[in-house]
Image (cartoon, rainbow, N blue to C red; front, side):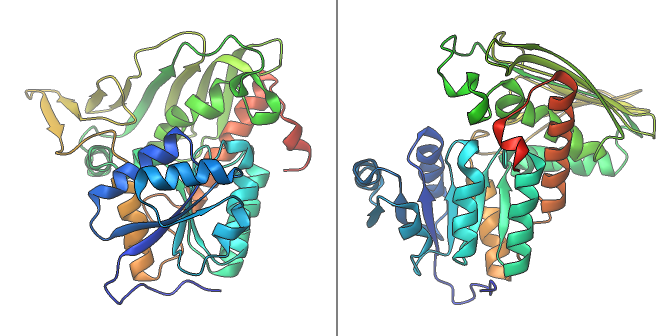
Length: 337
């Protein structure tokens, strides 16, 4: 079932797969888009699906993922499960011909990611990673400035994302089978930020503190490119960090305040000029811009987004795999993904 453009002017009809906090935030943010409509929600628990549907006024609630995937009134499914289930959930929807916006990290490893991308491309069905950072107006403006040479040739990128995470060894963040650790949950942002500016690195070095369960508690990575550029990135679930990022080039630098992945602005510094502040209206934490990009693509009949391209998602997953290999983190799914 190939995707055709939604050209009749009607709202784009969303299904939401999962009922956790990120699903609730996304569903609430869709209200910012007048041409979006949530028509169905699914969970492994029918009671959870009904509670979520009542909360947001969604007409249909399913206790099985397959029922949502089979719903012909759904144009696109937002997959908001924990990432260990992304391959199964997104694959089920793609097999049924549903367009998919899948939360990040896209999958547990590059093998699983490649399977989803191959499936979507073979079916002619839209698929995009929910890397909301790429879709926000502030980040998109930063990319424009860098590509226009505002800082010259990029030489270094710095980014960090650390929190005080759970001590409970039974928590999903401490569970290898659930893709636990700092890298996939938090490190995906610094890595994706570096990829956005420099592409896939030629060299990867990393160091990590591992938990007794075998997941990374704190990871530092040094990425290198043959151009001479480098990126110094860190993430942690044991130490809160500034959540900042910077881009330095041969003629200037860009500095982000706390929360570089959902920024309200950044400052451009260039030699011989006063610092310039760039910002954008709206809530920086809103996921509406990524939903709007999906809807723009669906209306155009596109199966991939140029803003969050699938080849870029695959490249990020390969880098995450290389970092995990360097620090010795292995997931059970790595043997099959």
